Image 1 (tube, rainbow, N blue to C red):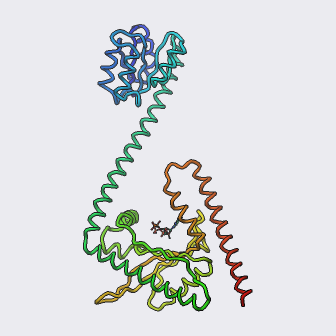
Image 2 (image 1 turned 120 degrees about the vertical axis):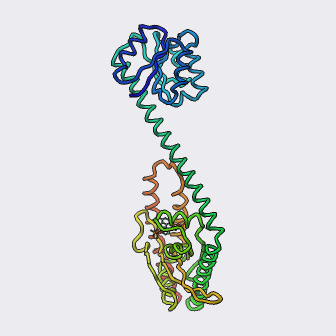
Image 3 (image 1 turned 30 degrees about the vertical axis):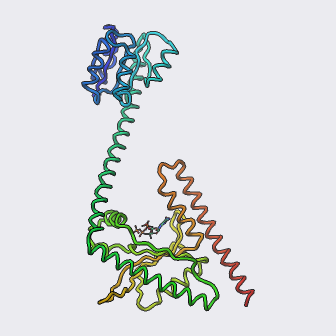
Length: 356
Ligand code: 0O2
């Protein structure tokens, strides 16, 4: 049972209210403001509501309210003012001080019960929600702390840094091969199949998060075995058919092994995301050995890249209102972008034909 406190100097009123509420709550009573404050101080966490008379000896209702605000108790204890008269001015003053509701005399059993129950339920929900948020924040902080410590350890470990150097070598290897293809293509067809290449090594934080999320051990061997996107390249093309042509030339190279292909252009993700992903095993040449390293190459058109970058940024915006509508509009944009890509490609084909 939840505990409530009735602060009222008139004994008859105290008893009346106590009798009305005793079947639902543990009811404490105080005959003056000073005693009420003492009792609140003794049970600040357990008190689910305070029924407060404004005119009391030792400390009146306004003094009690002022102290409660000072102590931060108004945030979690609903206060219902017991009053004998209707004064708009006083009621407004009380609301401004954070009072939840009023119980007017003469007391009507059902009204008293309902008003107290409503205030208690509302505050209980609010308090529980705040506790949940505080707990989540604490858990997140602890998780952040663990990630910081673990990634710091990774950063300092020599085998990890060697592995990162090898992934960097894989990026350079793929980048060089793509640049060679670009140069050859521009000689043959007088245009470049891609506009730009971006590359990145996954950060230690992101590596740690992914290993944890997927339930893999956090070790250098596990990174090598289980993660395919530590070395990541993004190739931005003008037209969809250049994507497939370039990807085909790359895969055809006899020392590159295609481990997996995810074609989100022909089968876009439900949110509208389009790109061609190749997971490759790429040889790197060290002083004393040749090693295969995994790398992920994402191919997109300029328009698909524009969409993905904007969508990625929006995804991390918190507390978005109308998230469903935003997702639907983003999907519409992705579909328009696809149509635009193929229309541009068709114009390019028409120009090519007219030149031959
Ligand atoms: P970052 O920061 O880009 O490196 P997994 O990679 O195993 O977690 P999955 O499903 O195997 O998940 O990979 P998937 O879906 O092929 O996605 C791999 C990468 O593609 C993502 O990397 C993104 O870069 C990109 N991507 C996939 N889906 C979307 C999307 O809906 N929107 C955008 N903007 N990009 C997407 P990460 O891991 O997110 O990290």
